[in-house]
Image (tube, rainbow, N blue to C red; front, side, top):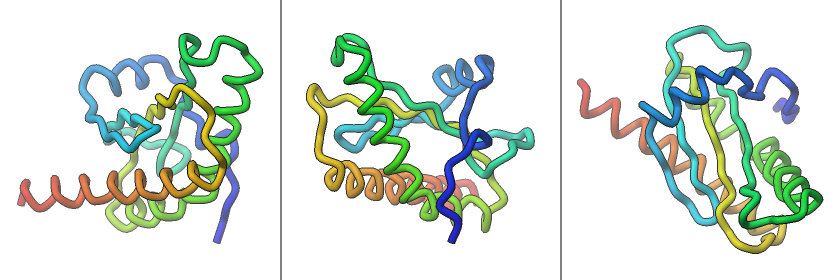
Length: 133
C-alpha cells in the first residue's frame, strides 16, 4: 500500500486545467468541490490533482497554506480508493479540488469528507459507464 504523494500527482499543465473547467464535471462534498475530467493522454500517475484554497475566504497566506497542506495529507491518505478504481478500469483523471468552507475544519473531519468525496467520484464514474453501454 503506497501512500506517497509526490510531484507526479500534481497537475501543473495550464491547458489541462483550463479544459477541466471548460468540459469537465463537478462533484460536491462539503467542504470540497472537485472539477474532474477523464484524460486520454498518458499521465505519470493514475490521477493528477491541483489543490486550491480561495484568497477571498482565507486572506492570510499562512492560513491558505495550512488548508492546502491538510488537503494534500487527506488526499495522500485516501488516494487508494481512487487509484484502485482508476487502474482497474484503465482510466486517467485530472482533478481540480477547491476548499469552500469559510473556516478551517479539523483534520479528522477533512479525512472523512475526502474519503466520502472519492467514493462519490468513483460512483459517478461507475454510473456513467453503465449508461454508455
